[in-house]
Amino acid sequence: MTSISMTSTPSRWQSFRRSTAGKVLLTPKGGIAGAYLLILVLVALLAPWITPYPFDAQELSIAAQAPSMAHWLGTDEFGRDVLSRIMYGARTSLSVSITAISVSVFIGMALGAAAGYFGGMFDRGVTSAVDLSWSFPEILIALILVAIIGPGLTSTMLAIGVAYLAQFTRLTRSQILSLKNETYIEATLNLGAGHFHVIFRHLMPNALAPVIICGMLATGDAIILEATLGFFGLGAQPPVPSWGAMMSAGSALIFKAPWVIIFPGLAVAVTVVMINLFGDALIRALDIRAKLREG
Amino acid sequence: MALLDVRDLSINIHGIRPLDGISFALDKGEILGIVGESGSGKSLTALSVMGLLPLIGGRIERGSVSFDGRDLTHLPENDFRKLRGKRIAFITQNPMTSLDPVMRVGAQIDQMATLHLGLAPKAAQARSIEIMEKLRIPEAATIYHHYPHQLSGGMKQRIVIAMALAADPDLIIADEPTTALDVTIQAQIVDLLAELVRERGVALILITHDMGVVAQICDRVVVLYAGRIAESNRVDAVFAEPRHPYTSALIRCIPREETAPGSLVGIPGAVPSVAHYPNGCRFHPRCERRGEPCGAIVPALAQPESGGELACHFPGGAA
Image 1: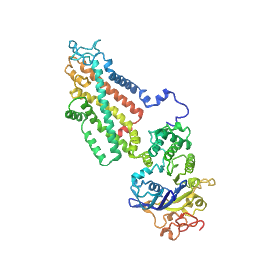
Image 2: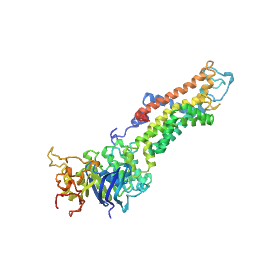
Image 3: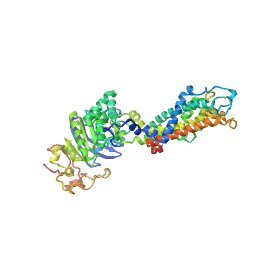
Image 4: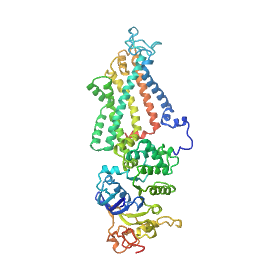
């Protein structure tokens, strides 16, 4: 990474290969996972237009039929097309987990940055709260929250967001703690910059990469958590399809029509594995394994 | 009236007094060198002027620092922050770590102008590129978009200098700005800095341990030893006739063409630590001219006829 400038302008292909996106997508792991996730997002976005059947089209005469040419992944106990419902389910799963994690990352970064930078009472308060919430499993926090607010997608999002908040707060705080002693931070302060300028323009961008990765991996966990809440009937309410709720319904038919539970389960498993693979490739590309360990 | 007037400055850090009775004054367009070995209080002098002593748990015990007619010793931190960067800029020792690794260097220069002069982003960019060109950065418009890791040490130090110049300060304090650079670039950077200072009528305090650099660009020099002034005077007078034995010793340490290989001399001994300053003249244990009173009586800071200030019982040169 010495002076790579001035002599010749690299071709677009070369500069893509050198970019972070290139380093992720051009590895087998990153490429496959990236392609899968791209397709999944497209399916989720376009579900109303591309599913073979509407998600709520009941046809009791063909209830619990095995996979066939007409219904590739079979039908459930009301004769609804499993494939169409999985495609719609992706919409629920992804939107819930991505929204929840994004908001959680945002708030966690703000809390962690303020705690790490200013220290004092506020830091002690935040750190204690984080440590406290780390002694409970995420699912327990989520269940308690849903029990308080009542089932539904909004409370699922809230539950997921709160359950992962501690993780992002802690990681950001540790990043800020080590960054704030860097010479360039001191130099910027010496040149008259205020605290907010230093936090938002210098500390946050430097702390961002590991937090993004952490958020990416947490999204995978959030999908599982969403499915779990759905399985217990605490997430998406019928007839909105969600992978967890579909598995829950399928568990009653597990011997009679196993495809009703297997395919949504596969959807969850494959998606989570792909997200983890993608995160792994991203860690390699950004070379931040050491930084993540600090958190 | 001088732009910066430091009088009889003494500071206190956790009960010890690492600076004792420092005075100097500086006008616009002037370059003042502060020299001394490590531990002599050069950087602390800079921190005092910048109002950054509280950061390291210190405070000004006695004396005054007045800048442009304002006494800075009792200035509230909020007012001081408006001064820092805008009117008094600071260049740190190490350019390698003074730049934010994830921000384009141009944006880092821009932020000074947007922060202190309230310029719009476009105007700030144009201004930054202009300053970069003044600092002879080749293809400034291209380098503007580079990240620090893409630049060499000398280039990074130019960016740091550009940041210091961006808000048009009246005073720049450069704390060993070339120490971390290759010898080949040191002279270049120092010359460039001096040229810009003269051209813009900025006052510069150059903190260094290198008498050679002082001879090269400074107008006046303050020689510090163990927290006290040994000698201060015009550079030409000091080099023509160093009066304090410490100054002569420092000048002898500059390598010259006629210096035979292997004959480069140092000053025997080391600067005493703050906790164990000797009585009397603090330099006397290492001094070649020490005599009867040196170990007992602190030499007063006198104003000899040759100009400047001097604290020695047995001054050399014209008496």
